[in-house]
Image 1 (cartoon, rainbow, N blue to C red):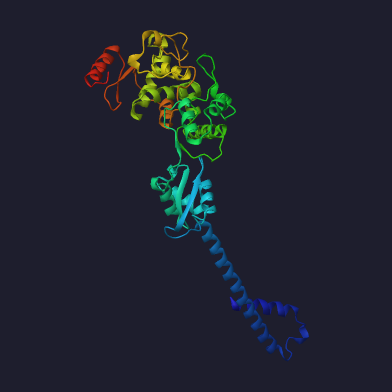
Image 2: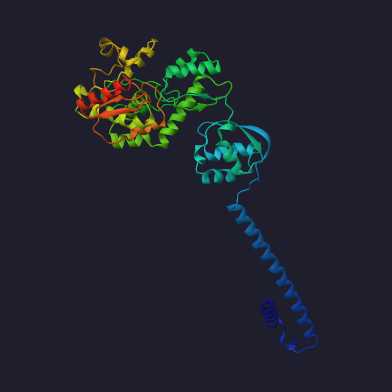
Length: 396
């Protein structure tokens, strides 16, 4: 490289030198000085190039390697992860509390952890300056969670939700009932109340208060709490592609499918039977092989009792008159179609069950053991045999 630079320098000098001085004295000394300059230029150029490569390497290394702490951390710090937070939003919160060194390190650690997407909202006891891997592990450990959240379980009605939230927060029960009167103001999009079954549209918050553990702000209003729950429902519905799937595969409105999900949540004794109960509902209402396309689920009766402020009843205590009461809009006996609204707030498993139930000809089901398992049948004869099993097991 030095020889090439020297030659280039000499060639440039030759072209610019007066011809009558080509053989003059002192030419040899000037040539030596020029060689020294060329050597110095080459040395500087190598230094610049080498420094550029080093800086470039560092930038590339920093791009692919996120800044991270080492070890399990020190001290203690409480961090709140809000509902519906993305991994990036969680990472930003953790960086702000100096739990992890960078959001990128946290998101990378969560993505490579098989359970990384299961991190829930809540308040957690963590340490400062933890490695991203250690932080993810801690957030997935139930022992790290501060147990001051309010847990809304699958199948709770809105009335149950209001009572529990009021008791836990001190916000008056009346505030929740007032806020719930306008579900669209709480964030439920108007299209959710469309129906394809020609029944009267009844707008209700029922079905949209997603069951989970919530940690609300200390001074949150009833409207703010219910809005957070609605937003959580919408995020879960989007995650499972509920709206598109039921419209494309079930050929019904999302509101009807949500109602079926709530009915399955109320009737199924365990999550394994949710899909089959949903299939029974669809077969009875839309299959054309069941008398009057009536649902004939007792759970609608109990929901109406709760709407009226009356206590619930076990099915075996309901009279024929109660089951067929024409004043009860939630009755499903001798009345075709679904209930006017969902009858509780179903969880993700029930949503999936209503969205994509297993194929089957079932029209009947009955609980056959004390663990809540049901037997399903396509004919009345088989259903009666299943009832005898239930009686033998002391369920009926």
